[in-house]
Image (cartoon, rainbow, N blue to C red):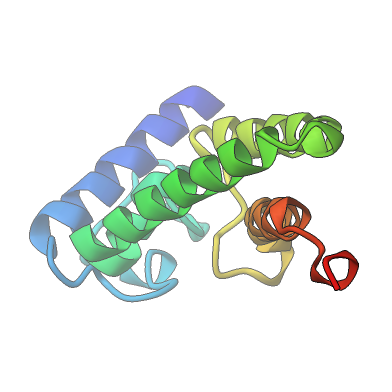
Length: 149
């Protein structure tokens, strides 16, 4: 079985988990523990750690509410980057963070470090940088009160 075929099998398993538990999900990081209930062909002797799709992992672990939160995280990151884009001095940062976030999102749709894993900090870090850029843009946009004296 090729790597791409394995991904398809893991995605099917995740979709089935989501269909069976749409409101609650199966629980955080329980994808690998449920191999008896949801067998994964090709992983009989090894644990499939996660569905290798970030959106599907949120849906599998946390159900529809988790998937909506994942979508809202990316939407709020987009709004933060748009707000920071208006500040000319922040544009190089916005471009860099946007490129990193796009790279992480593409990687997250084909493979992903489990979002609850200690090594998943890069994705959370990128979202934090989006928020920091918006805060910086808002602080830069304020008139300086000390000079109005």
